[in-house]
Image (cartoon, rainbow, N blue to C red; front, side, top):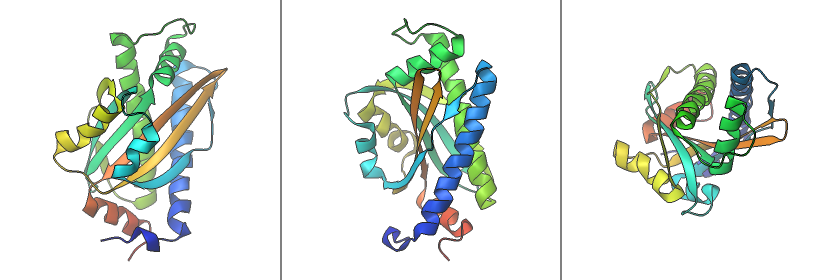
Length: 204
């Protein structure tokens, strides 16, 4: 079992690099989709225990948009990409070139969010694969709008069990005055988390 207290700053440096590369790729992909300049803020990257993820999302009864993926191949686990409703509306307004008058997400919006979640998650997965040399595959996305607490319960319910640690990457994009904040949670299974650390040279 990995003792997180003994991990040095190398791990955080590597994970910040993962966040920077993944966010840069994601911003480029998003800018291409909407044919506009998209600015990226330096992402916040942390390793959390799964029980602490709820604190990131805030009020457990707050409605959020959750987009889920299953990771497979040399790393097994789950990915959640979570947007608050304001960010989801900003993102769909940006994608469809609308004013900010809309206050509900329709079927077309959900489809677009699912595609964006797919592109963003693939950007981070590709960065992780490049840094570790490990092969990774993503399932097709599954999207829903629900309370934050319900969103968090999905990985455990859907996949039976989860890892203890979560790699958290806060992603922020800006286009004009629209700010989009998305929380990406990589939840590798226990063996896969140790395989990631070993591949990064952090543990033997």
